[in-house]
Length: 398
Image (cartoon, rainbow, N blue to C red; front, side, top):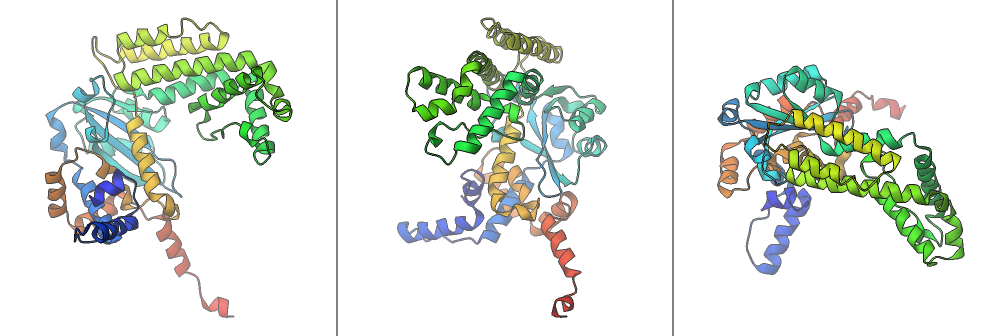
């Protein structure tokens, strides 16, 4: 229950103890109240138990899903998970229970030459059906060197397509600059209700829909005369951009529909045709450019897909793991990446009481320390402590 409270419910380690204290107080359950250190060790034991030896992967073909975290301090965390190919061919999005952690390791940087031996020593390359990741050079070069089929993640691919069309578009830049100016000037004013959503700085082309949905809503309110004179004046920049906003919103909604289809049902010939057909009613210049790049992307996927087969083309499940991990450590980012990243592995695999019991009984503290020494470099917190020890305290007295 402690493990589930942390990995599934997002409860902090210290709060877990308080939950048990209150359960005992109000329900008279007379349960033990584990300390946060005990819960930490349980999570780490569960995480280590999820890793398998190389022989395990010889039973079937596997799909590798890889991603690296945004930098924590001066380190990056690489996570590669394996999913049975048979599971990826089903028309159903992946869940945590489908994942088997293959690699979870920290480094100052991850280059292709560093990743290749890590994968090779953990799984027979003949057992890899294909690999899914974003278009990062280090990962794409890794899979190319290993002669593994690489499937570009649909979310990142769509973001690159959108970026190529809109990044240097004059109307797009005018619109986003006007939104930024509106937020800066009116966020604390009496007309703050009309201020647009915050725009993402990192990977901003991955989530433009809220900005254009806001634009459509404001245009409707203007047309229905539902705004004050001051609000109308502040939104006057929308008038010359009406057609652009409407067209772009329709493009983004269509792309979101295609993404949902491919993420939930996978990529195959039928879904490819259905996706392209959704653009048949949109004939603007920007939509035609996007449609052309979509067709190229689908042609690339088709060349990597056996006839009549369905493949997975989304790494969302790994992004979700990172998201949960960041939520768990959000209050202590200054520490850097520690062996607490094992909570990512603890989330993976089937939730089974017998397996959890086995992990608690078989994984010992020495194994935790050995895993940490092999996979986690010195944390940022440890580096700061080491640096502080070199300071001569007598200097302050003088």
